[in-house]
Image 1 (tube, rainbow, N blue to C red):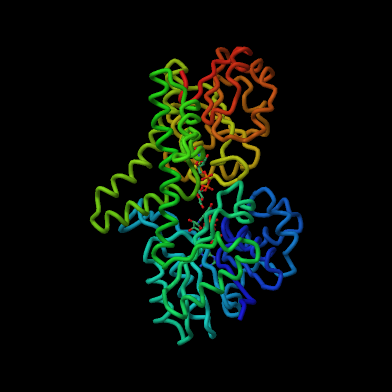
Image 2: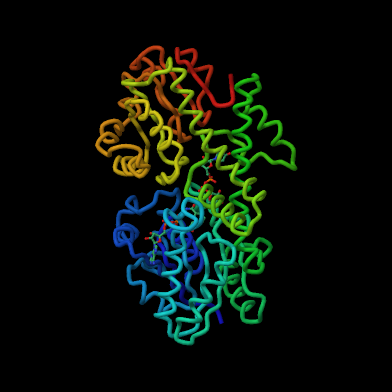
Length: 464
Ligand code: NAD
Ligand code: UDX
């Protein structure tokens, strides 16, 4: 029997796009995405597709094809649970900010609440799918809650971690490198795995659907993110050595990336990785290792985070020292606030930390980002709790255009690799700035020769 009704708890960056693609590719399955956040659900239902709650290239087209046909967004969580045969849990699992494991462990309170609600509402057998990124062995806890608080119905638990990256989510979902499904190695477990395999088989080649036991699947997600982030920290660590020796980090990355054993992806040096996943998931991995007493392994992975923090701080410090050791009262322009291009997501963006460091030095920050709202930027800075909110309001100015942001400025810091930055009238920008005018390119996306010809002092990461 094929699955006919699915619901997904959590209409965020993962739940929204993932379910939209599942609904698009499976028109015979009713897909309901639910969330407790009414504003978010209203935005998912907005007639004007430019008002969807997240910006993701191609998402509007996918939503418009299925919404109202077999894709629905709702705040009625109980009804969706009751009506569905398969329930995805795609709620947030942020780093804990309190109690045991504060600052490291994943906060599983939202996941546990989902499990309890599913147990309470369900009156028929259901397959529960972990879509959120979770510590290895979480499925055991979920099963425990479901079996001990439910009304006797049968639950199968699957792990189906999501590997999409923001900014390319639709492409990643349509053409995944692999789909990973972990389940219990029992007859019932295998039946449940097969039901989820069938859903993905609508558009994913069977050779790309990998099935494993539950714990391998849960751990593979943390491991994938740790490996990806580790590559960025590795190349960033060497960018500092390049600056001191005259080697060029982009040339080094090209040279090593051509070795097929290494590969060319995730070797782009930067001001540091951001996003909601890498830091959180590595800290979680470190915490699990520490809890199990394997401290050498914990220390090994923690170094990836230490290096990333160092890269952000080093970048801000370079601005300070280059501007004659003082930025007090100087206007500094930040271009790009989101953690990468083609997304409005700002979680853990390097820009927040660079701005914070420069405000500590009493710089006046003027930011332009094509997609991030002023409200979000102020929220991000205030969340660091570094100083009085009123001071943040005074020091962080959000501008409508790059030209306004750079007028009379002493330096520009490029912190996101938005394509549009390359096409600006850089002569016009230079003419409006204080001299000498600096550019600190945190993504190495601009043309050094062209900018130096205009008169800029151009500083790239990993180059002299
Ligand atoms: P998000 O914060 O954008 O969305 C989570 C949503 O869950 C929120 O809208 C929240 O209101 C809702 N929610 C929380 N508790 C709820 C409850 N009890 N009932 C109903 N709704 C509830 O988070 P996200 O970025 O979509 O991430 C979700 C999970 O997927 C996390 O575990 C994350 O690590 C993982 N993940 C994220 C990405 C990514 O690129 N963002 C990629 C892969 C995996
Ligand atoms: C990541 C994983 O890639 C994805 O598989 C997982 O599901 C969620 O976490 P995401 O955080 O959305 O995705 O974006 P990603 O493209 O991985 O970029 C993360 C950060 O690393 C960004 O700040 C990006 O700019 C930075 N980065 C990426 C680099 O600095 N250099 C690189 O070479 C690649």
